[in-house]
Length: 371
Image 1 (cartoon, rainbow, N blue to C red):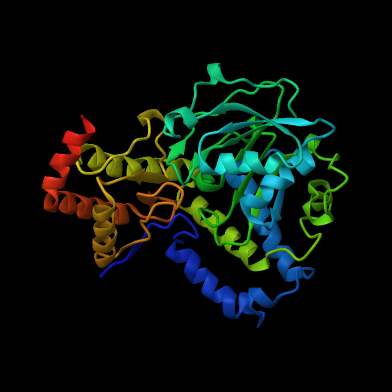
Image 2 (image 1 turned 90 degrees about the horizontal axis):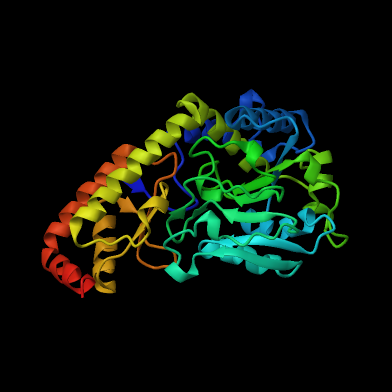
């Protein structure tokens, strides 16, 4: 039986990347060493590091006045590192709260500065994103932070906001490398690697040169973007293996047709699933259609017993890791770049079968939903 992984992270990896990783695990380029064993100060890692940097800069068309940092600590670590590094003499920052992770980012930033919630999706229970015209941006803010895709809530920006002279900063963890993006629109962006850029342990930060140089005095050396940029992200030992895997992922994406091709595939995969959700009468996605995520599809069934039965039956069919985030519940199918259309097609067949087997529940769900 085929098995398909829909985990939200760490997520599925493409077979060619896994095969290349095997070689790196035991005898990298005939060196007799595993990538896990090589010194980060040696020529071997310098080659791996530079290849990953060059591949990512090519993939995203990153301008020369932006630095790429390969760090540790996850996106959650960046929730603190951002205000430490980007306040630059100011005492406030704008945050747009569209779900679980942007809310966490704002909470962490309050330890370092005054946080202005420029917009919030709380009124819709994070099923929609407020129109830009309704945002209350502070022109004196050091930066404006958004989360482009909320993994727990299934909400995604369909276009980037114009924040004027205030630098736009974004957590792009879950839709990183899933579509083309104009890096010049950002002051900084960051992503944990374990969704679309490899394995857990690596965090990618891309930051404009002019935003460096003014960290808070309390900023530890290993969290100082300026120092990290000057030292090629090697203020301490970098996550050598994770950088290696990320480099393989960047090359695989390019070989598959680049970000344009990833975007086409991801839209197609998401459309397949939203269609079966909307037509079923059993499944319900509360997210407004215009902001539905193309990489994390979140939905519910009428009650917890049915959701448990769905998860059990899916696992029996080889459809793995579909349980929703603990903060949101329900079901979540994550379609990162390495998840194939074949996998999504198998999920769609299962969901139609499950809906047919539970048609009476579908009837009550439709009746109750309409009052």
